[in-house]
Length: 449
Image (cartoon, rainbow, N blue to C red; front, top):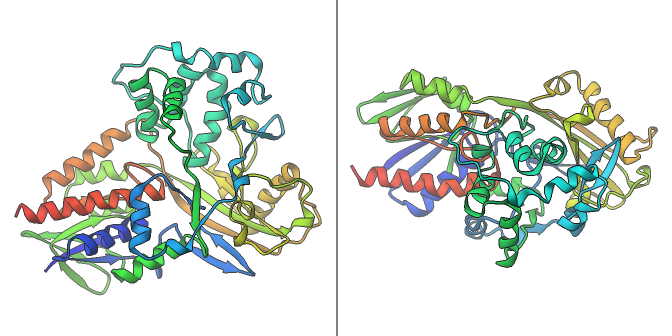
């Protein structure tokens, strides 16, 4: 039986291992995880009745492969759907929270943008399609099609929520390829949305599990072989096989899947190709802290009737936004309480992820007092600072060239494969979907021998 060494026990590595176990019984995947537990940034723990997520807060039901995985693991009865109030999204504008309109006509009558900037959006269907091969930033794409006002406020906040990044540096083709497809195929974002509505494409809903997203990673870990606290320090190629070296041992394998973050994979593959490993290692990451603060509902003046809020950069605040976790999944917090998950750091404000836990907690709290009416004298029931110094990869201008280098690396070094959120999508569901593709590539490699 062929051994497959999978480096990284996050959602990508675990999903690939599960897919190989399920669809390739002649292959034996072994997951090597450097830390004491699996899951990567997807960790869940419970404290005083609060279900606390360290990373993502849920997943959208728009990827059939995710549903198939949930069913294979027997977790269907554990799935929970977000509260309908979570459809409401807020934006900080002119110093306060403003509800984002759910429908286009609502946007035209909202006060989020001045009237001329709202009217500019109506001209989007007549904006010429960009046929240039030059990599365009998210900001430039949005400003060209929708106007500078939308780019500065709405798109800026949207990018903050997903990448904690700078829209003027992120590549639209790499970060949001669907937007490029909509422009290319329909000539207009508005026309594309009308077409989707006409085809009755349902709006995806946010989901989680009764006991949090850790339910999924733990179920995956129980199905595959995982070796925790086994950090791979060196990869050596010997003939048609590879040797994975840890601090205390070595393991011969017939193929290697690097499902670790790019900066780890780049370092580990230097001995195989300095040129390609350098390009992989050049993918930038940004720090993000997740600040969890829980209070009694009586200490909050305003209704937390939504998913939470995001903050455009021009508002000049020290946080990126805050998720109203107890509203989204009501069973994740005790009755009569609220839970905030406030985000700090990112590409443009990395300094706000620095400092002591007390400084960071106060930084977040002051914004909740100002924007959500938190009583300044309220005592927290639970408060935690979860630090991710290398939180989210940035698909900046030129990212497609770095991904192309990954593809060339795989072609030139047989039996080496790359996966995970560093390359083709940062979402949990993208990592799960890609696992099937990677599994198929590994199987095809051995079939061609």
